[in-house]
Image (cartoon, rainbow, N blue to C red; front, top):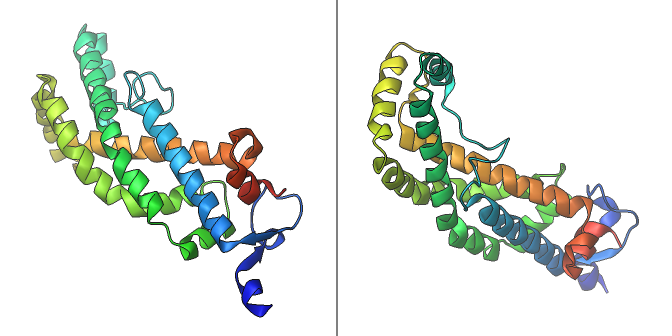
Amino acid sequence: MPTRRRHLITLSSLALPTASRAFNLSEGDAAGGVRAALERGALAAVAQLGRTGGFLDHPQLRIPLPGALEKAAKLLKATGQGKRVDELITAMNRAAEQAVPAGKDVLVQTVKQLSVEDALQLVRGRGDDAVTRFFETKTRAPLGERFLPIVTRATEKQALADKYNALAGKISGLGLVKDEDANIQQYVTRKTLDGLYWMIGEEEKKIRQDPIGTGSAILKKVFGGR
């Protein structure tokens, strides 16, 4: 049955680190598995980051002041102005936490639009974050457009936003801060996206390492090798 064989792939030929033996995997199963992995990772990332403390209390994703401003902040703290610095950092992270939930529908819609061809490429992809990297190329631009107005509104409520922009603008003119970091809204939006994809990537790694533990039959079949 040549037609049937064209619609089957053998897992032993795929670059899946958790695969222990070969089995026939339909293209539909591959697409379903990748979609399930994407949606599970995306929703988990949104849930974890889109809450109070999601960024601020996370050791890896807490958004700091950029470059030279971080160094300047240490000097400000040494001169008794630490409270102002802490308020600014808190405001930046709160803005990121408020923005993340607004991206949920964009992420889910992207999952639904994933083609079978894309799914097969992702299952064959090397690395524990192949799915996440593909996901980022599809959603980073629209999510940035979605997040920026929310970040802008959040930071404008803080008296610190203008102070940040004024200070960063002066330092940027001296070449100590990248132009892309000289505006708090753009800087926080970019760091929010970085954090979101980092978290999705961590979820993908968990799925690849322990697909059975997800409780999902399709993820077990696609990523478990059993």
